[in-house]
Length: 110
Length: 230
Image (cartoon, rainbow over all chains, first blue to last red; front, side, top):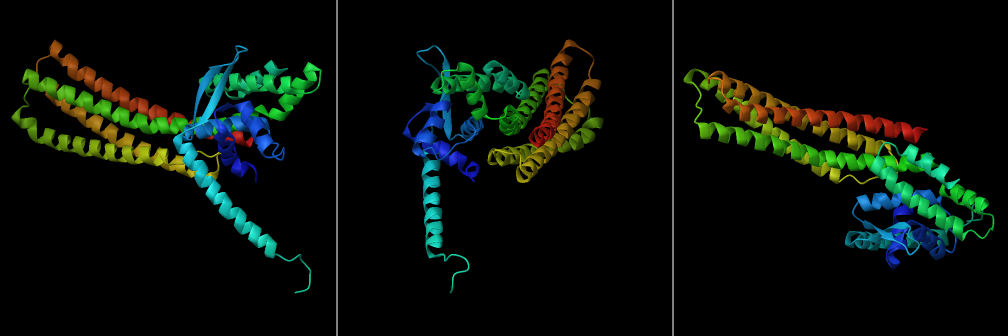
């Protein structure tokens, strides 16, 4: 289920500002209260896929340690896509919330 | 330990060397950060955990293979249009050359040249239309994380469009060859033959290159599917 929403999760993690892959994973962990524990390697194909789709841009940045980092940032299209994802998710969440709130445990008398 | 993992990852990404280099560097930085952030004092244990958390390199490579395939497909969509534009330029250069040298056709071959010319024009027009449709179609296909059946069908449709566009282009190039031969046979051999022959060779090379790239894309689709199954 988490994998199906990975693109939205990555876009949301980058909404705070440009970041490299490891920082994106840390942000996902932090914002989700450690609830999302993805195989970290799967973030990179997602970042590349979103870049290919024009939702992210990326560039190499040299850290003070001398190590190069690929830093990703939301593009305008990516920001718009995140807004759309949020709206759809909100709708879905409210619908499921309403459904579960009205549901009776199975086997209980009608 | 990290170097060994990165070697396995780069090996699994060997289908695209520049992608392999970029991913290797990105994930190397990631693993170094993850190992450094690990609370354990044992560096080897920290690296082992970072690697375990990163996941199977073949699974990562399989996801990248789909992205590489999508990128190649989109490039092919543009490549077909570029090849068609190149053929058009070669055609126009040849016709301009004939005009500059005032090479006229003999009356007895004019009816044949008119028929071949019509075939040429319609085939070329068909290749342009189908190539534009193919390019727009593939650029509108969302890139999935896995090579699922629907994406395979989309890629197959795109390859079919490219094949039809290239087939029409080949017919146009053959027509150009016939027209060029008709014109050259009616003239004494001279250094002025160089431009028509070179322009025709360019057209043949462009069409041949397209055929090779379409075949390569079909093979890469199969190898990506195999990578995902293993």
